[in-house]
Length: 367
Image 1 (cartoon, rainbow, N blue to C red):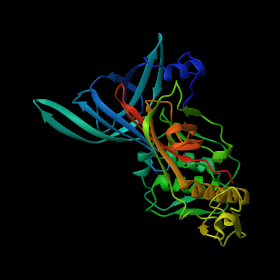
Image 2 (cartoon, rainbow, N blue to C red):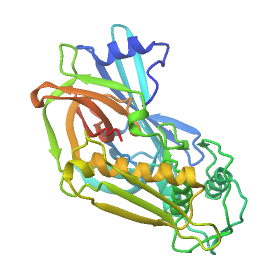
Image 3 (tube, one colour):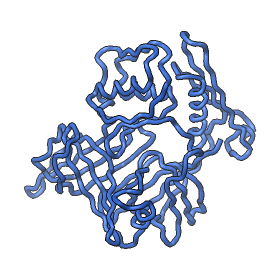
Image 4 (cartoon, rainbow, N blue to C red):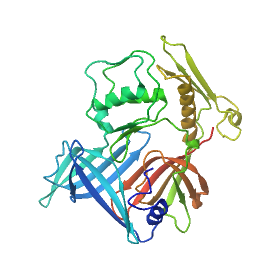
């Protein structure tokens, strides 16, 4: 989640502003060139929507409708929308991402020309770029250095990936049909890092995966007198296809074999071998992994992700622009009798004053 202590306000002041009954909402649009130098603040965007899907390859997308604007190089420029909220003489601003302006369509209505633009975050740069020959990484190369080099080979330099001392265990070659984003995410998986993402300021980010149960709560949504939750939430529960035994092994003839097994035998888990009375196995093979510690952590990660598919909630609030990647939320929604910790896998924000915001969350499972 984006920091709440910003624009001279404390966390408590920001929360009070976000939950104010008479808050004023405003959206601003910062036009950047391809090197992300500011060109102008433009007022020709008429409607917009920003969507975030943490489990997708390209996580942040947007849709803008704007008047024809001669200042905009639709092929190369980038757009960074902001949401401002004011109340009680205080104002706070949140960036909503940096977007490439893709596939604009033009339409004329009563001599007024508008463009509808599908936009995606900067992961698209890496998804659309391939190496011209099989990409080689020598054994002994530091993982994060290797990943950063691939990002920089596409002309991008805003990178913040948590450092590691782990190195690639053998010479590696990647096929021509793998995009640069595919290669990067393969290497991040071997480290048991999160998949690559771009933050709201346009920086490429990844860090070691942390189990949801070990993450602090980022925000609380509670149906009380200060609530910003709107009616019509929906809960979906599916226990049928959830596995409870997870086996992952590395198949690499150049290294000693590595294997990791996790069995969910938790008495409190409705999906465990004890509760179901049988074993439901998920077996996976990896070409490479950094070491046994990374493999064990990766296996637990698969188990957690498989187990927490069983309970999802979709709910709506006033626009809350501080959300980002996999925020941990305490959700107490009285009409459904729900009060638990959830991880936000997606959200959608309409860039219009007074509009609601959609949240998609899944229950945090403790293994």
